[in-house]
Image: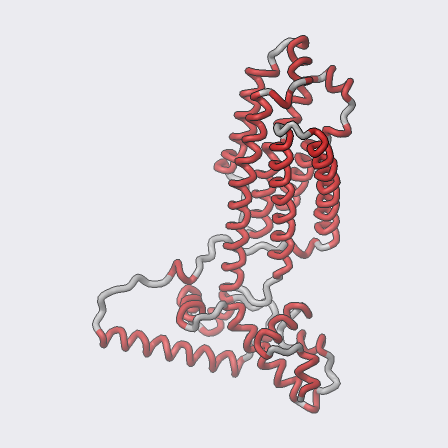
Amino acid sequence: MANRLFACYLIFFAIDNSGIFIDDDFIRHHFNFEFFRWTICALVLPTFYLYVLSVCFADFRLRSKHLLHLIPFVLTNVVFLVRLYLLNEADKTPFYDHRDQSPEMFYLFLVLALQTVVYSIGVFLVLKKYREIFQENYTNPRTSIFKWLFQIAMALFVLYYLSIAKNILRYAAVDFLWIWSNTILQFLVLAITCWFVLKALNYPELFRGIDSKLLLAKDILPKENNEGIDAKDSQNEIIANQISALKHYMAEKEPFLDPSLTIQELSNQIEIPVRDLSVLINHHMDQHFFDFVNEYRIQKAMEILKNPSKKDLTVLEILYEVGFNSKSSFNTSFKKYTNLTPTAYRNAL
């Protein structure tokens, strides 16, 4: 699904930005084709938004409700049908020659501006949800997914906000500035598109989604009630015992050595319902599951680094042994807990 949406996004993006390559004589013989090409811009951001959803969440499927994203595209074509498509050729020529001053183009620019604002907010809200769910339910998450999507979203929306600024210049009677801004923007479009495609081709492992139905701990916390002091003390004792049992299990059985450990798998091992375990770690222990597990991995790595009999092990061998599968994430986590890199920590012993 992600690959298909990615392909659609690239096709729509290419069509939208292909105007500079289309011969003017061809346009004047196929005005409706050119008018329709203008409306394709209303499909680019919706497709990108759906693409982000499909990459973030493995259970994402296109449904009938997603047809709502076609509304701007359909409305734009309805407007163009009434105002442009049905005109005779004699009327289309003067419109095309003075299109920048037309209400139809102003409407199209307004649609694009509104879409940019709405979808930029929507995409970053999706990324925020993805990051929160991953941290609370998975260990050693491929943060490169988040970084990749965040980077491409930032680049794309900077491009679109620059496009809005460029369109404002179109009406500011500053032709020289508008021409140069348009030229620079086209080069940026080319560079970002090439980067986007090459990144996707070279790193296909980036695209690993999560279950969107997973709830955050704050969403499954039991509601406050008016229980007596004895009941609350009993509840606190149960929570304390669960925390003690969890810490003991982590220290004795070392489930964190599994690089793909999830909260569901740990729940099955320790026989605590996954919802209760999520609340226990993320709320009562005030840690993300990701940080909770990585803390044990770092402690294990510190023990190995201190062990003289294992001084010949490389940092790479150690990180794999304790459950990490990425050198960058290991170094980041290690420095978070010790303020030192693994190599600096070993040298300081």
